[in-house]
Amino acid sequence: MVDFDVLFGEYVPSLIGADNVIHASVVVPIIYIDGVCNFIFEVRSKKLRHQPGEISFPGGKIESGERAKDAAIREFCEELMCSEDKLRIVSEIDTYLSPTRALIHCFLAEVDNSIDLNVKNDEVDSIFCVPLKYFLETVPEEYTNKVTVMPDDDFPYNRMSIPQAYKWGTPSYPVYFYEYENKLIWGITANIARNFVKKLNSML
Image (tube, rainbow, N blue to C red; front, side, top):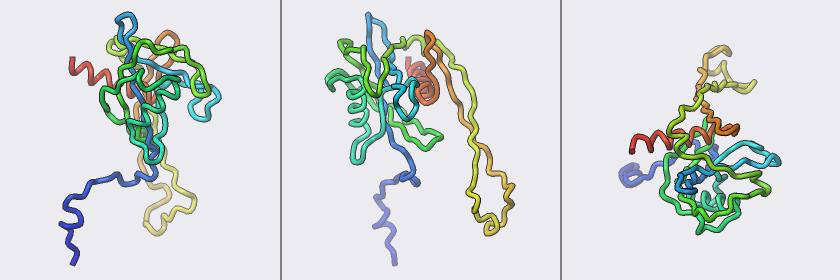
């Protein structure tokens, strides 16, 4: 007889399907310049394989055995070419679940204003700042993407007693756009920024 209380009494739940999920971390960096609170964004290098030339928060994939917070700090320091003492993690904030199977851990951080923002390297073309006030006062444009389910050609419809024209449904998700001084902040980055300012507005 299986004693489920012994086996599962103190079980810590995990995420089913986690092996197929990409785990990443980003820093949501806040910096004060001349008394004005800003977000820091980076323009990704056009040489990169993924999202070349797009605007994002500093961050990247979590390495095997690495904590999400450590990955966020490592990526920030690599991309902005700075030492760890240039930022202070305030807290982990909401995690973003991407429709493209990415789980993105977000960390709010205050950045020392002595940091050099004139950065250009293999990953980053440039760095720029946007006042937090802009996001607090701006409603982003919103569009919708739909996800289409396309089963394999050999999918066993006959064993399931369903037709090939089976209606799988079309999940959809919002895509947000902010445009600031001809710079387009959209997608995951815009979603994270929007969520943060919504939470901040509710607390002020």
